[in-house]
Image 1 (cartoon, helix red, strand yellow):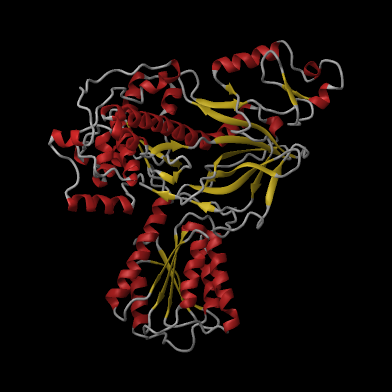
Image 2 (tube, one colour; image 1 turned 90 degrees about the vertical axis):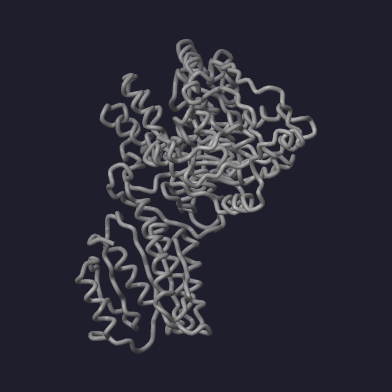
Length: 626
């Protein structure tokens, strides 16, 4: 620890005395701690009261008013609380309130150090409550010796280091401020708890203006507006009639019955149609059906129900404009966790045409742009990965193909941006479908690999399952040895831009018994695949989401919020070619892109399995990534 780390100590008396306040970790603090150990200034006595100690801890934790530092709370007790028993539920509740205020910025460690029979249920409940609001919390009950206690404290220091890393700009080393304008709800809180904000057609002060999707091709790697399925005159979504010329403008039956040319009354004729048709042709306007976008009215929950290293998450629902109920899938809204990276302008939308204010508006969208660009490119890798699995079937006999078709596929869900107006203030909300199931992180951008995979690979090595140099053993499991010439794939016009991403050569499966194709291997194989099939230019990692077995038996990893590492040589090439700002921005993947350092970190922990060999991937040594 350094002198910028501050430590406070609170005595758990009935009035919760602060013994040391915000002291830097220097020799001065060390000497004060020695004095405490020698009991020269304070002797342990009396009871231990939890409630006043938690209140005093909250006061100390809020000393850093600009929210730019990681926080840690060590709660050390030798017995159950001396607070009156009726207050014990309040102790747990207050710990929850504290965790709700700081979320994962706060690491909590409760230590109960006493005889084994001592009741520490309140401490354990405090830890569970803190977890329910997103804080990193642990309970430890060490044996009565210094080594055991030191091990637990080291774990708390590790959690604090993780929080600090999340709050540090990797490229500049500057601290980032966590937003304090949010309220976190308890894990699994029902939808009826908390408050919702509706953006509906019958509220002129708060409504949805438009939706945006993303298109990634040479003509337009940018936001694409989604055609509004609302009446141009009254904004109704009921019984719509489309313009026969462009299909991008709509009038409802009620407005149409008023007589006259309703489309002309709405200002839609001639040049307007031509303009919309040109936008379709240029690729910056597209349709989405009711299955993809059920309504143009939404409700957003005020409370945050999830918090990651980079983003906070709220629930979003589509509103049925005819009856006000919820329709369609549950959605989530993702915003930056940090101050300054997602700020909605407080300027009336009618003034955005001003150049200065327009820059502010573009800054709003920049956060969403990085997310959508990254997820769209990752989805492109996912489609190629799935195609490669389909192609691999051709190398096996019919008896084995059904088994291969049952292997997991990779799918990244498609996000959208909804632009809303509230009292003439504009706000942009990034939304995507809520993933139902056990949400897990399968690997990270720092080389982390899911524990299940580590264990399976360890078992595979112990059993001797893996690569074999015996071609006849490959044939025994149905592989057809029918040549493995590499052929170029035919690219469509829509895939032009992907030529820069992918090496389009088809690769035959490697030699193996293929007796160990575990589902858990495929996320790691996908990250490896993205590196090799992009000629080492990119790697998709930080894979997180849910593993789903569908009704038809097919398996899929539904993923979101990936990270893409970009090799420095691609950045250098773009700079040399001076292809302009738009080209450089196209390959901008934000602060989580660790470049070749991230690629090396992946291969330091990655162990190739039959999933890699099925895709014809070569083993890579981390030292060979440069």
